[in-house]
Image (cartoon, rainbow, N blue to C red; front, side, top):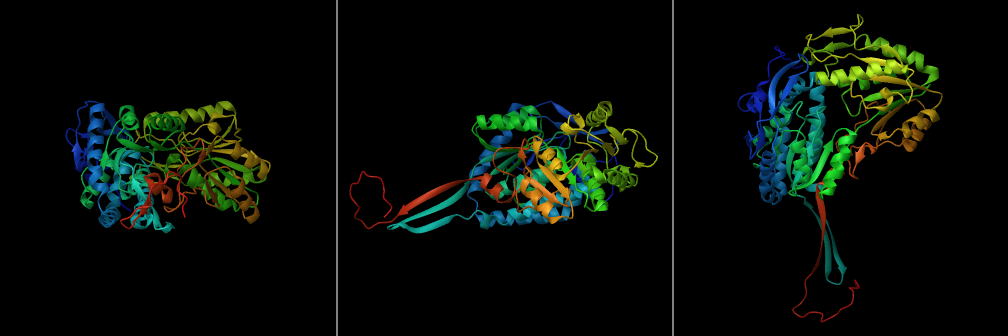
Length: 520
């Protein structure tokens, strides 16, 4: 496993794209772009609590310049052959695979997740790059010969133009890679607006694209806050928006983008449930609950946060979870720990507030991650943004720790009497991103996958993230728009159809006929 001897050192790969004055710049025309704005935001190392750099926050003029770069590059990239695009995609894939440990170190230094988890997210994103390498097959049109007498009809799919990607802090590599490999493979140009909390990975990816031979302007990076987001949502040169984030912001992105005539896929929040039936393997279920609830400090849109347990086995399962949590090592992700810090001090305090709200509401606090626990192992700097694994029992659906997406290492056990009661609880929740059932009953599992109103379902799989050639996305308040991410749906989203009707005739023509064509 790759380690960093000095946790406060900025990885060399980040230095290469930092720019001057310790400020991470935007990226346009194949190079760092400082822009004109003097506004910046601090970027922290969550494991130490120290500011490691500043990131530029775009002005409207900066956004205009980056979007203009992408717009200028579009005609040339659109007309680049599929063979050449494929070669560049394959080259990018090889470079990413060879150097992904660099990116993992950058992610850990800014997000806080452990190195193995950071490496896993890059590998997961690489699946989409590999899917995009098959672009020639996935972009094929169709042709019908002699649809009418001497008339052929064909269909093709063409790129949209400039597309914007607005990605969250929790997966600075994987989430953008859900989108940009497919968008670029399809012939579009991309403006990526990453989170200002962990922005360096975006510049690293831009530099990797340049090394792979991607023409300047095809992949650009616009750092910033709401100014940058609104520029992407309102600029007429941007034809589509892909977004991942909280539901309120997803609603705003969808409404604003569509009001400005854009295609929008806006993936929102989640409250993922895991239903455990009495016949389940409780050791497997306990492992899964800990892995899915506390991995990446719970900062995953697919994290399990509501553990729905049939009451008959709840006490035994909770005891098994407690045994496992006691073995976890929380600390600096570069030291081989199991769970790292939260991304910022403000977010850590927000999650701690939810823990107190759960106590105040009457839930039973089984494990309190806010306090030093002699049964937990800790290895990190005192000023890091720490909050350990937290477990509640006897949570009810009216409590904020159940209703809200906490986005932290807080696992809530909700007891139910039966499968039907558990299913009703899941289906009545406004979110529908991911869910899981743990059982050895094939009939119950089959019934669950049919009846549950959630977009991604796991059967004895706690985090049911689909492989790259299937789509990713939820239902209900977890998705705004009608197209999920990646898979063949991604190629459909980033292209539009065109149908051509062709007739080649002898020099004589058919004469005047004002009637509707009869296709004979």
